[in-house]
Amino acid sequence: MQPFNTATLDYNSEVYKDAYSRINAIVIEGEQQAHDNYMDIAQLLPQHQEELTRLAKMEYRHRKGFESCGRNLNVTPDMEFARKFFAQLRENFQKAKAEGKIATCLLIQALMIEAFAIAAYNIYIPVADPFARKITEGVVKDEYLHLNFGEEWLKAHFQECKGELEEANRQNLPLVWQMLNRVEEDAKTLGMTKEELIEDFLISYGDALANIGFSTREIMKMTSQGLKGA
Image 1 (cartoon, rainbow, N blue to C red):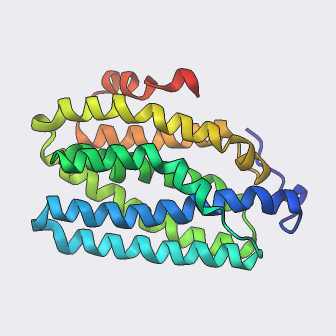
Image 2: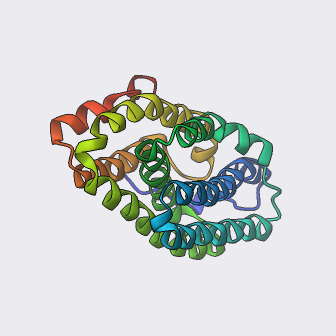
Image 3: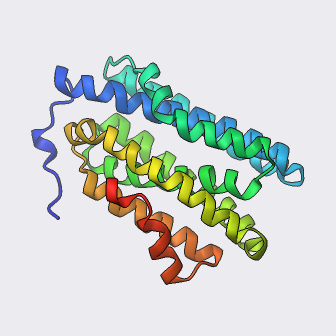
């Protein structure tokens, strides 16, 4: 695939800013929810509270960084859109937390959402405005650390939670595809294609599932769930 020609992007155009108001809001809300989710997981895993609190604080710093990206372009993020964007995934996380399903919570936040973020940030960096590029490059390095925490815990408890992970994947992966569809046009305006986002997400998510202990055949089956609507 040919790289996007950033020369065609006008960061100050109304069309760009309109799309950016929603994409910027999504990353701000995503980082805030990540903060909240890690604090919730810390309640389920009190022995890891210090590490999870550190990750949560990192996510909050990311939120502040992305807020500055919006201010740099004089864009007001559409936070109502962003809250609706994450609503179903957030609801599923809260339900799993209430039921004490640690593996489901980690799959949603530390694998799915982190892989989603890594994919989006990696695709965005080459087409970002210079200020946002610098911020995003710093953020994406941190996200790999968050992915790693979830991988390590789930790997250590793989046999006991494998069935729960498969069920959580069935329930939540289709939501990721729906989320990608909702931002397809806005992402395209910012120079990112849905095909690139899907490819990068599948690589990151698939690698995480492999590191936990799933076989290649199992990963193919799991990642195909929900793809029909993508």
